[in-house]
Amino acid sequence: MKREVIYSVRGPRLLPEMTSAEIGEELKHTDIIIFPVASTEVHGSHLPLAADTIQGTEAVRRIVAKFASEGIRVVGGLPIPLGVSLREMDFPGTISLMPDTMMAVIRDVCNSVIKHGFRRIVLVMSHDGNLGTLYSAAEEISKQPGVRVLLINWLPFLRSKYTEVLKSKSGGHAGEGETARVLAAIPELVHLDRAQVGPEEGGSGPQLETDMSIHFGGGTFDPARGLRDLTPIGSFGDPRGATAETGDKCYGIIEDWACAVIRRHFAL
View (tube, rainbow, N blue to C red):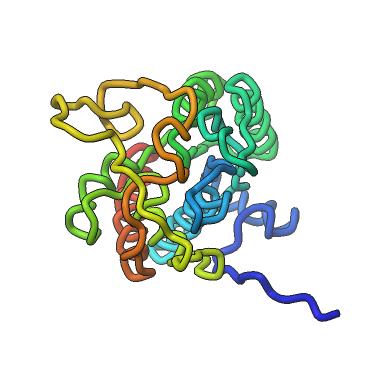
């Protein structure tokens, strides 16, 4: 029986796709490594459970490629495909770590590459539920002599640009923005024919100034007991107008901002 090719991906290669010798060679030229930290959780009826991991991994590939085009060598790290997804456990297939487990995973991954010689570590938040553990992990790991840890959350900046790139009103969970980014990375895993329109993220009615989640640059965090209480289909907004072109525009915004932040903090 011939096995089908489910999907293909474009480089550059990340740490698990390289040999040990290749990582050793990279360490002669750089001590910077960039990890996407994501999740495996429901993303509506049209996106795979790995949607956050796909987006984070694609973003890191593009960041590495952009730096390479500028003559700056950095290594794309292991995508961490599990996260804190407690509210999403209403839906089959979601896998969640408890916050203390997630903290331990991040710590062990970072300490492994520190042992090999990486000294500047970038943690790219690719699932908003990981923000608290990433913050704590960055604080702890960076206390080691000679080690720098930078946590970056591109969600607030990208959302500030959504009116320029999206057709719909919002780019909520599994909405147009996320759907477009998965289309631009691995289109074979997107099923737009199954897409449903969900409620708008944040509910209806007037909102107070900055009364949005801290994950998106606001000043509040009111965790729901279960995602199904907020959306019966596991997604928000209207994803039906998503295109790979829009996804590419989103990634362009992410990589430009992320590279600028990394250059500034690490004086590249």
